[in-house]
Image 1 (tube, rainbow, N blue to C red):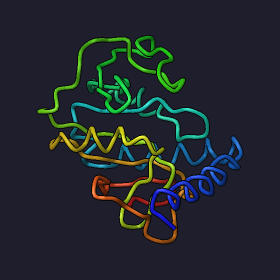
Image 2 (spheres, one colour):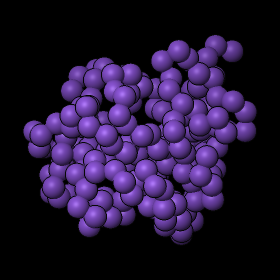
Image 3 (cartoon, helix red, strand yellow):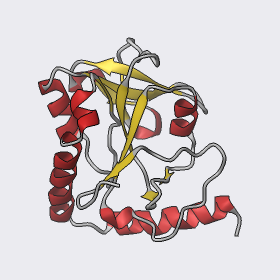
Image 4 (cartoon, rainbow, N blue to C red):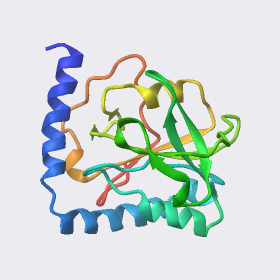
Length: 187
């Protein structure tokens, strides 16, 4: 089976598992994920936090957003610019987000993240493996963005049920993450 077809099969299987989590299971896991992230030295020391606006059954970033504001960190969210590119823009409150591309909330602000600055990035994913490989949604936005940066500490967040037992199929443009955090492990 070709890599692209294999990735589609994995996405479908893992997303089904994630979608089957009850709201109680999801909420309990999100609290543990949040606690695991804020315990990381890299999060504590970062001045810039790059988040995503969760959609559907993805891990919520709401607690991280509020914690980042409380700690006086600069917070940035991605905005899709075209079919292949996204950029991160600073927000100062939740009111700076509006529904945009793919029905995902995006910043309406115009202050971009400077890729020369150090940052802690939280990435969404459909699946991951023990080697910290990440399977996204298949559009490649994060991989292309990360290919032009050097100062970003990457942290994927997922529920433990999203872990793929085998090594995920990766292509030359796929980047393993520095860390992946679930409710029960920090990989």
